[in-house]
Amino acid sequence: MNKRTFSLWCWRVGLIALTLSILIMDLWAASHWKHATSAQSGTLAATFGDPDSARRYPILAMDTASPLAAAGAKVGDLVKFDRKSVLAIRFVGTDETIGFTLFSGNRASHLSVQPVPDKGILPHAATAEVSIMSSIAVAFFTLVIAVLIGVRRGESPAMRLLTLALLCSSGIYIGTQPIGAVIDLYTQFIDPIVDASAYVLFTLFALTYPEDRPIWRFKRARYAFYVYTACFAAVPAGAYLFALDIFPTLWTPAIWKVWGLYYVAVVCISVVFALGALAFSWWHSQGVMRQRLAWIGVCMGSMYAVYFLFVLDQKLGWPVPLYSAVFAADVVQLLALAGFGYALLRHRLFDFGFALNRALVVTIISSMLLVAFSLTEWGVDKLLHFEGREKNAVFDALVALGIILSFHRIQHWVNHRVDHTFFHHWYEAAEKLRRFLDKAAHVSQAPALQEKFMRAVLEFCGAYGAAFYSLESSGNYELQKSTLHAAPAVIDPNHDVAIDLMHTGRFVDLHDGRESIPGELAFPMMVRGRLNGIFLLGERSGGDQYRPDQIALIGTAVHQYGLDLESLRVESMERRVSASEQMTGSLQREVEALQLNNRDLRTTNEGLLAMVDGAQLSRIS
Image 1 (cartoon, rainbow, N blue to C red):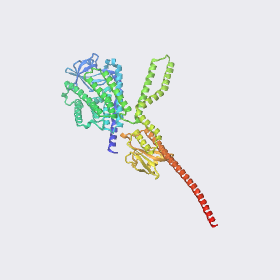
Image 2: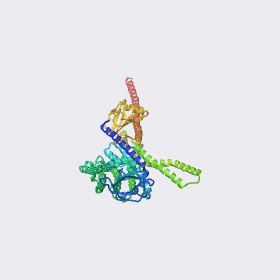
Image 3: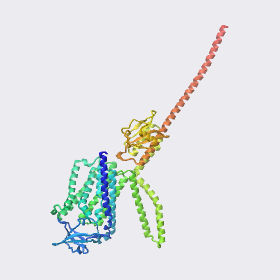
């Protein structure tokens, strides 16, 4: 195992472990989603100020229905909670118990209360439920995209940075997880570094992508990033100092106000820095890379920018109510993720391969269809309710039958549209190769056919090179044309590759210890059970593997190419035979003419001899 392979293996193991940890936390938090609904959402019905150096929060305002008021607390008293995560940005359930120490004057007492139902959520009940469900959807969707990029593009350092940035943004557990040691640990020690890492990693990704011309190559950009990272590192460092009670006299209410403004400032700088870097790279890029940078900038930039606005809303005291802010942020993030997913699948933002991309798209679309049909059945059942159990059962059966009969037709139509929308470039490339094969029969010379065929195949699959060998009179397969590096001049008919091609009649993978033959795949040119030629194909650009549909189409193309070459060979032989027959006929006619002339000459000679003989007889007589 070489160093690069080992590094990629370690990365994937670490990625899977980190993903499983986040997934477990997300599932745990999602199981308490009702804490955000009007049925179980609770509140202390009090407003607190910034804590003092002893972690005591002053009560600034309090409703008469507050459980704190029932416990004897008054405005101006100080409260120190047993769990430091109580006042985090999260939903409290009415089934939870909150312990705290109440400081009223010189008297301190430890109390426990249960949150009262949050009446303030009632006007926003629907928004709250939709908001928490959208938060769960955002978290899992982000997690899926992060894993896809991390696994399929783990060899790229820039893609690793983007994967980690997405993973840092994929947690929902701080919102609904119940009060306890786990959420205390997370809010005090994990969340500060995760929050800072999400911005820093995305900014570093923006500086290192695209990898062929990154902004990172400029010294000023690197120095600016170092300064920016040091400024951001102060945020988790300060959180750790506070959590570990280091320099306790430092944490005064005035410091907390300055600290909040400082956090907003560095987050704002982070968003501007990252999006500015992407905009600079976009401006100096062209073609596909420019399109990719535009999608990344718009989608990912929207996600981080809306989170910044959410934090700003919190620091300003929620001028936009919490539920509305969460809902708006989730809507923007869902739209951004949807756009990001569309760009991944439609515009090959990061090509995951045909099979995986198509499986994802079809699964998503089919799931949406099932949900739509389920909602339709539920809505019809609610709107059209018949008297009597039997009538309802018959009606439900008819609705279900209609859905079943129509689902396959609609799914077939949708899948067809999906294939030609998301995978249009693959179908277009295949159709271009098929059109060439249809026209190949009209090419009249073998060298021209070889040139055109090799160019068409390389354009179709994006390989680095190819080579064509034909069976010659020597019995060997001799190289006719090649763009493949280190292609041998001759392939022996007893070579393992040639034997496998003759035996199976299908392509051979050249990765199975066949070092003497370069390339990735070898295809046979079979004519009437005879291996007339061998076609070698190099690796694809970018290191992608050949898809099964590509291999099948290339195999068909090579077979037809072999038949076309054989047809040209036969036509050439027929022309030579015809020319030979014409030459033979011409020679035969010349021979016959010569024979006729010889016969005439013989007759003439015989006449002359007769005359001579007659003259001699006359002279003698």
